[in-house]
Length: 315
Length: 214
Image (cartoon, rainbow over all chains, first blue to last red; front, side, top):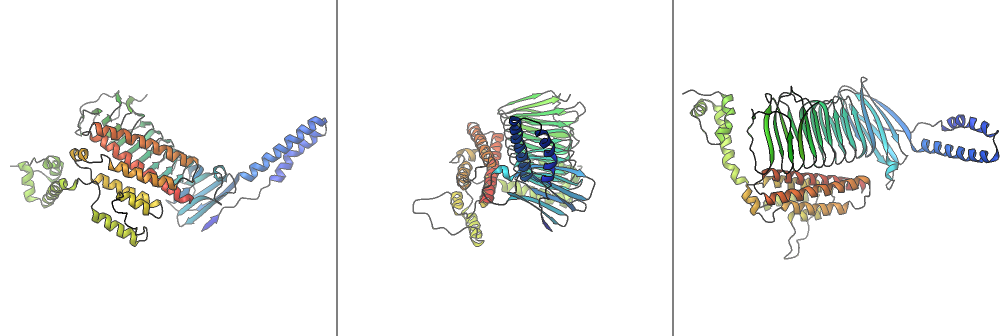
C-alpha cells in the first residue's frame, strides 16, 4: 500500500479573521499615523501567518503493524524523533518546510518505509527540510538515514541502524543491536543496553549509564566518553586517532584493561594488578598500560593514535 | 603418562602452534579424532601462511582478468582500447576510467582494501616495497575521479564530506610518516589501514550522493 501523504485543508483564513478582528476594532479609536503603523504591522502579521501556513505543513499517517515491525526512514534533510509506545501501530507526523519536498509512506507486510524526496531538482536545501515525529511499538526495528538535522530515539528496544552525515544521533533507553555511523555528527547514548557499534570521523561519542555487553566505538577526531557498567564477559573497545578517550569506572567494576596511545598519553586512576586473562606485548613505540582491575571479568581495550586516554574514577 | 581432555587441548592450542608438543597433548591426539583433525588443520594453515604473503602489491593478472571479464559480461564496464604503447595506467585507475557510474567505485575500493589487507606481509616486505604506500596512491586516484563527478553539488552535506575527507587524508599522512619512521610498529600500520578503510568508505559515500543528485 503506497500512500502519498497530503497536506490537510487549512482553516487559516478563519483563524486569521478571528485573530485580526480585535485589531480592527482597536484601530478605529487611534490617530492616522498610528492607524498606518497598525495597518502595516497587520499586513506583516498576516503575511507571516500566510507564510508559516504555506511553508510548513503537518502531515499525519498511521499504520497498523504486528510484533517486531521494521521501520525505515530516509530523510536527507531534517530532524527525526522516534518514541516508543504500547500501541501496535506506527504513527508518522511529518512537517515539511515547503511543497518542494514530498513524503512517501509505504507499508509492505510488517514493514513501513518512509521516504522524502524533492519534487523537482534545484530546490534550495531549506525548502527540502522535513521534520519527523514517529511513534513505534517498543520492539520495532529501525533503519534511519538522515544526512543533516538530528536523530533522537527514545525507549525503542529493537535493533537499530542509523546513518548520518552531519546529523547528531541521540539514543536513550535503547536496547538490541545498535549500529550507528556518522561523519561529523555527535553520538550520545544514555541508559542503552545490548550491543553497540558506533563509528564517526569527526563526531564525538558519549555513552552514559550504559548496560551493554559489547561496545565498539571509533572516531577519528572526536572525543569518546564511556561511563557505564562493565558487565562480566563484556567487551569494550574504544578507539580514536586524536582527542580524548575517557573511561569512568566504579570500585565494584571488574575488567582487564589494555590502553595504548601511540603518540599521546595514558592517565590512569585504577589500581591494576598484572593482567589475569591475556598476554600483552609492550611495544617500545607506544605508551601502553595493561592490567586487571579486580578479577578482570570484562575486557576493556582503549587505543588512540596521538590522543589522550584517561581512566578515571566515577563520582 | 596422563592425557588431557578436549577442552584442555584446545586451551593449549596457542602453545601447540608455537611448537610445544606436550606428551600429554600428543597422547590425547592418539585417541581423539576431532582434536587430531583440528591439529592437522591448524598445522596445514600454519605451514601455508608464509606463502600467502606476496611481494607484488597488485593482485595476480588472472584475478583482474576474471573480474574484468565478469564486469564486461554483466555490462557494468565496457571493453576499452588498449593504452598507447609505452603508457601503462595503474590497474585501479584504468578500472575507474571505465566505470559507467561512480557507485561502482565503492565496491572496487572495498576490493582494493581487501587486497591491501591480503598483501600485508612481514615488515621486511612492507619496507622494501616500492612505492612505499601503493594503496594511498590508488585511493588518491579514486578520490580525484569521484570528487570531480560530485563537483556539481554544493550542499552543506557535500562540504562536510569533503572536509572529513581532508581530515582522513591528514591522518593517512600522519600514519604513513609513523610507519616510515618506525617500520616495526604494527599498531601504526593498523591505524594506517584503518584510515585507508575510512577513506574508501567516504569516497563510497560521496559517489552514492553523486549518483543520487545526477
